Image (cartoon, rainbow, N blue to C red; front, side, top):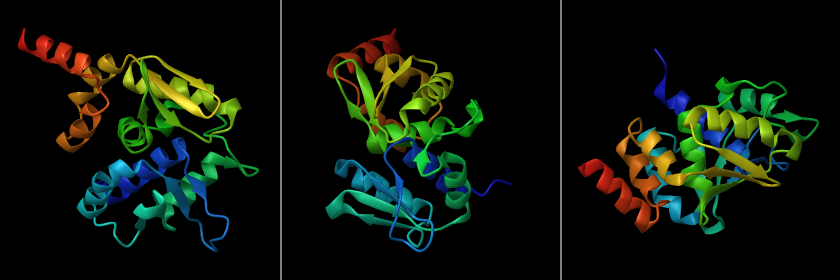
Length: 193
């Protein structure tokens, strides 16, 4: 049986690495420092409490950063995601290196709504942005593009409709905040037909 706590930690580490999470250069152990949207503090704290991770994750809300402390999942994933000090995602194109929950967590904790898309800031090396964008698109079934230091999820309304049916309510409630009023209205109209 899959340990839900370990699976969540793995997904949070992946989500953090997809964005701007970085290895703490001043820590004697492997630790990941992750800048996040301060407006998502309550959501993050709720997840940490729900998965009983108070001992493994520290939230520094006044700095808009959380720290994932040394654990097996973190050590394993950072070995895969880093090469010669650069965050690379992966040397091979493998869709299974990320999953829907890690994408959703990255979107909710780090994403920002722009006029036509959701942008997720990233520190993945520019040569590997195409690969991760392809993998994300494969999972969420909407176009994803990239620019230096950002991954963009296009067709936000379609994205929401495709993922909403597979997510727990607490994720859906957060994702709704990325929809415009016009998009919310269209979705309500489609549901009522």
